[in-house]
Length: 56
Image 1 (tube, rainbow, N blue to C red):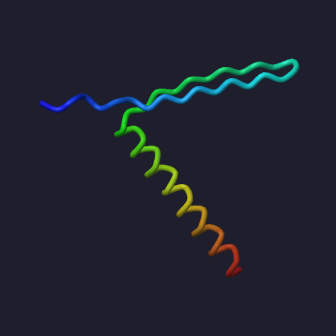
Image 2 (image 1 turned 180 degrees about the horizontal axis):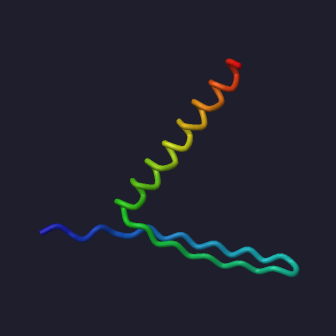
């Protein structure tokens, strides 16, 4: 029996006057893969748009 996948955790705390922001995110390995695929798709799509715009 294999161990359950461990979650990745990230925390961010930013304080400036007059704002303060705290954020915490937990992501499973499958979630990290999904995020990577989405970011890759966005980057590839942007590259296509820029290439088409340069041709005009």
